Image (cartoon, rainbow, N blue to C red):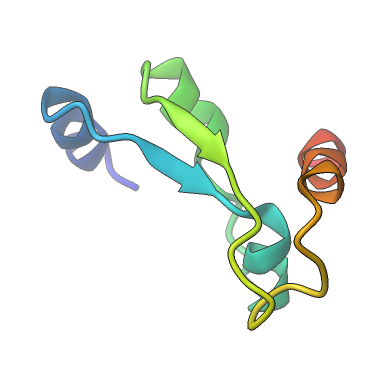
Length: 69
C-alpha cells in the first residue's frame, strides 16, 4: 500500500478488516500493512473471513495468528 493510498483511506475515514489466517490460506507472502495502517490512525478490525478461505471461524485463533506475526 502506498503512502497516497493510506492518505486517501484516512481522508475518507475508511475502516478495514484484517483476516490473517485467510491471508495465509491464499499464500500471500508480502507482509500485511496492518502496523502501518494502525500507525496512520486507520481503524482496523480483526476478522475470520469465511470457511472458503479458512479452516475455522475462531476469532481467538485469528488473535493468536496476529500475535505471532
